[in-house]
Length: 154
Image (tube, rainbow, N blue to C red; front, side, top):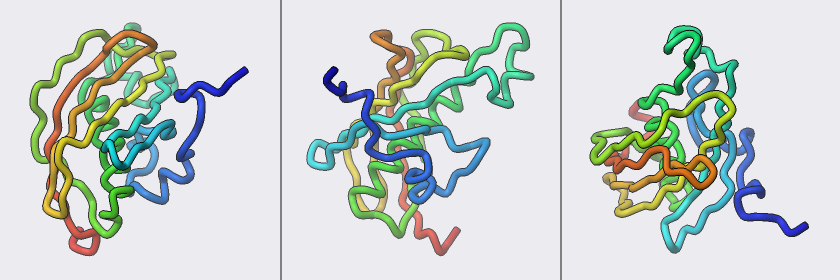
């Protein structure tokens, strides 16, 4: 059977940990399945499991993945794109979230495909546009702006 683009792994969780400063329980990207630096595109994957620590208090009995953490997963996926564009001595820090729309609840068992498009990326900052898919359903869409900060200054 031929490999489908969303089945492959471009960066594993261990490789992502070499790029992002985040660690458990705040690392929100499990793997990267696609990256195209010329098109400024990247697709990350987040597997939502019932073992996530916040499900104990975020609507017990009716676990819903917090929207703010979905935005964080988008931002982290964008951060990997920024790193791969050559800004490896800097960290992208969130400035603004616009046009965020949550189209369906995210629950344990869902697999989020984080489609991120870099609209503008520079040494000072930039803007990304994202859509989060669960299978063929649109779950979330948003635009995020960020500033670039030297790693040594954090």
